[in-house]
Structure formats: structure tokens, C-alpha cells
Image 1: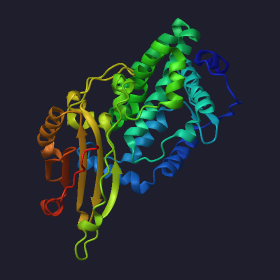
Image 2 (image 1 turned 45 degrees about the vertical axis):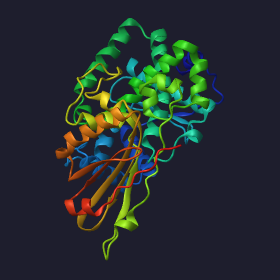
Image 3 (image 1 turned 60 degrees about the vertical axis):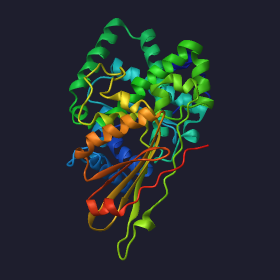
Image 4 (image 1 turned 90 degrees about the horizontal axis):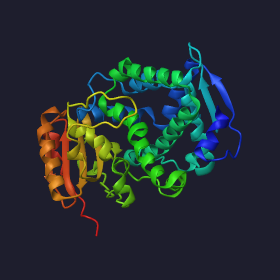
Length: 378
């Protein structure tokens, strides 16, 4: 099976890829270790608090447990660029056609790594979440295209039907059903919109075009994946630098710190502007039409700082940039509509760059904070 992938992907292996079988328990242990190696628990908990304060996650949710439940029970095989090894998770059922497709997908990652250095080129600054997801969309989209081509060439009609039935069964998976939309959106996008993005490149220039993207022109944002015409036009996100205002917030014995930084990008902005509205269920792997996606479609850039201070006080400072003034006005109006769902009072102001949103735990903290915008680039 693995031997069939290089010819389909048009990439010859440059080295053997060792593989080993591990148990589901071993995988969960490795997942916890890898999770905290990549993202310290303190950072993960800060992200959890941010998502709850923005009404993107229920107050009783445990972000780490949600991730473990999702990935711990779903993954059948995976490739690790850091170890250059391929792992197959032993299950309680026979190795079926769906598992074969996953192996074809993951072996594609090994070929990508050998030719394009996935580990060396990986964006390691996780506060640049949108750029990370932009890169991931191209990488996973490529592997998804390859596995689909492999399945067409190598699965019988009966096996393909079995895969279809299993895919439909995923719609009832409790781990997915209980997943907050902001997490599910990040999970599904690389295999849906990422696939559509790569398919478009392949249709025009074959794997030469895909290779050129992975080697020299990885998408810089989720916006470029969601709107391939913006990728082809090289419409880069606007870089926003928010100053650390911790020292300004400190008064007397009150000590504030910068607890979390992030760039949301258009993908997460879609979930944010949707509020409590969610898209209809679709067949797994198909792009999703998000409610009010047009509000996020004018995204140009954003940067968010979250500060935490004494007695549980907190402040979110979020600067956004937009393609046009009409886009900025539309976002500002939507934020005001959502204000009652946030974890505290908010204020929205216009800056030379776009729209700045400040949200705080209480009115006193909000009054204490002075939003600062950045001049537009020249």
C-alpha cells in the first residue's frame, strides 16, 4: 500500500520511513507529552480562558480534555516529522479500507517532509495561529488529495462504500458533537477548504504547482486558503504589532501581565461573528458555509493581547484591520450586536488601521485601559 503512494503523489522517497504499531493508550500518552512540549499547559489554560470570555467555549469546558477526547479516539495513524517515523495505532477491529486511506494520507506527509522539510519550515510561534493554520491547510490539503487519488485507484466499489458509511457515522460521533464550533472549525478546515485550495492548484498546474506552493509559497493566512484568488494575487495579511501595556496597567500594588497573544485570522473570525449560530451538518470533508461569513470576509489582519491582573481582573485588547471601510463598519456593528454575550463589558473604537475591541472583566478595568491603535502601513 505504501509503495503505491509515491507514484500517485509524483514524489519519490528519499529514505525509508520506519513504522511501528502502538496501542491507543500509548498514543494518548504521547499526545499529552507532545501537546505540552508544543504548548505549555499555562498557555493552553490561558487560551481556554480567552475563548470562554469571548463566548467561543462554554464556561464548564476543559480545553485539554476536549482535545484529548477528540484526537485520542479519532486518529488511526500519524507521521511525526521530528522522529521521521510512521505510527499505526492498533484498534479493536480489523484494519479496513478507511484505515488504508489514512495510511496513504500520513505517508504523503513523510514524502512532503523529505522533499520540503516540514519540521524545519513549520511555524513554531503559536501566537501566530492564523499563519500556522494557513500552512496546515496546504499541507493537509495535499495529503487529502493524494489519499483520494489513491483510494480511486486502489479501493474496490465495496470498500469505497464502506468508507462512505463510516464517514457518515462520524456525524454522530459524541466527541465531534460535543466539540465547541471554534475547535471543530480548526479541525475540519485543513481537510475541507485546504483540500479545495490544493485541488484548484492541481487542476491548473498538476503536482508541479502543488510542489511550488509547499516549497516556496506556503499560504500566509487562512484567508488565502479560503479565497484562493487572494493567494494567487499575493494578498498578504496586514502585520499588526500591539504594544505590551502591562506596565501602563500597573498601579500601586496591582500587577498586570500579558497572559496570552494571538492572531485569529479569517477562519476563527468566521466563528466569532457567527455568535451562537452554527452551520448545517454537511458530509465530512466538504467545505462549510458559515453563518455571517460575509462579515469576516473583509478581514485584513488582526492581533489580540489578553492581560490578567489582581483579583481575577482581565482585559482583552484586540486590533483588527479590514479591506475597506465598509468591511470595518460591518464588523464593528456585529461586535456591538454580540456585546451582551462577552464575559464582561466592552467598547469598540475606530483607529487608523481599522476597528479596535476592548473587553474587560468589569467596568473599572475597562475604564482603566486606554486602547492604542497602530498607524496604517505606508
